[in-house]
Amino acid sequence: MTSPTPVVPLTAARFGGAVIEPVPFTTSDGVELGLCRIGGHSGGPAVLLIHGLTVSSEMFALSETRNLVDSLLDAGYEPWLLDWRGSRALPYNEGRVRYTFDDVALYDIPEAVSYVRGRIGDRKLFVVSHCVGAMSLGMSMAAGLVPGLAGVVAHSVFLTPKLEPKARLRVHLGCELLRSRFTRIPVDIRQAGLRSRYTPIFALASLRADCPDPTCQMLHNSAWGTGASLFEHEKLAKRTHDRLAELFGPMPTWTLPHLRRSELAHAVVRWNTRDHRYDRLPENALDSADRIDTPILLLSGSENKLWRDSNRLCHEILARRQPRLDVRYTEIPGYGHMDAFLGRGAALDVFGRIIDFLDEH
Image (tube, rainbow, N blue to C red; front, side, top):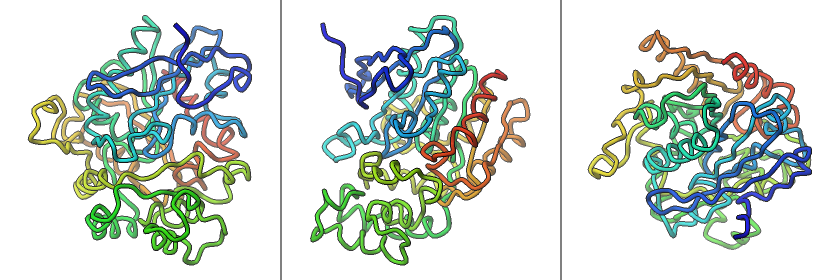
């Protein structure tokens, strides 16, 4: 039997000769995902990396800059890359197979954690998560589905989603209009076409743009038409900027109602309230945070123009409601949403904070 191909192409040379081991991984509800171990030689603790919606595990393994996987390997950790069903490297955002974030919390994350634990034995397991991946992880933890983790890093948002005001207005007022017209919103105008039904969204994103790249405009100026911004422009290396269309995929609009419901509540809530398959998930993850038994580092950039101060709010609420929980908040000066991982200086400004937290635990 031949080894499976990684969902995101990786080479051992990129990581100093580390072993690249793609893992065949299908969830119990029949969805094929991506899971890949990058093995160093230390036999140290494992770290499961969980990306955000519409990107992929490549956000942790950029070839053009020093990435988080490099930093973890050098610090003696064993990274595992998960591509859950919202990954741009998988076909599920195209609309043929629809999912909710409940599926990610119930199937993708707990079963990936279970698999990794089965492979690493009694070694410690940490998780570093981003955006919707962190929100879904929070729901899994509040459901008691991933107990006993050695530590969790949640970047940008965790249990208390709170959108930037302009994005909040557009999401709540325009959500149903977008859903009625589009199943997905692309970021690459070359694939969408200049005279496509997506042209008005690209045109809106181009207003007052200081960059001529349409993909950058869509992500930096408007975040799929929401008016939010996904990164601080000057933080990206030119090579990373030039391949934004490779790193980001289409936004599936059928996920917007779930995001909207959670944002209105300023809490991660269950979408499938009438389907008994999801009864293991709490209706409100924040109200069930007493089940969380893991030290947590909440990270966010000071210039986050998508989730604003969501993680600061989360820290304040958890510190008040769950005083027994080891939870701390760190703000990264000058960084936005995605540039904390994609930025050319992230290895100096961000990754050390993550590794310091892992080392402490």
